[in-house]
Length: 154
Image (cartoon, rainbow, N blue to C red):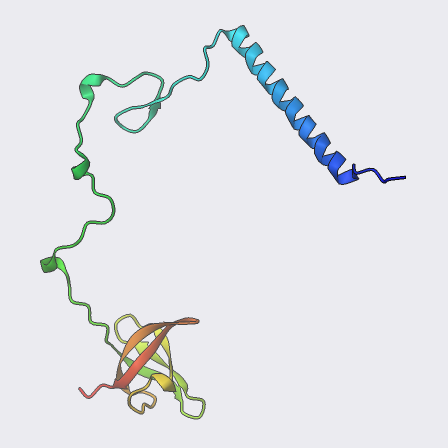
């Protein structure tokens, strides 16, 4: 005797499908009854006025503004060459702490008093605590790191 091909999972899916179909029919009938009861002709329109607010009255055609497609700017406009400020990536600071045996330390920026991590691999000159240095910043795993660190000769 052959086993039935109808499994429990298949029958549950079929039940869900039939229930969904029934719910859809009930909603459609309820909408029809509401339409007949209220006399509504369907979806109402919503308009946007000059200030961007939704209204139920159509806009006045006399206030229509003509806009050329070329006048629409998408994105950020480019700054002219004369307005650009040259960016200097080098910063000045003071070595707050440096452990030569472990090969890392911290530098305090003289502009904003932020503390930046530095590693011996990012040093150009040998540094010690309280030395004035020039460095650049680079994004590291835990924040900004001081790299290309060299002594400030001035």
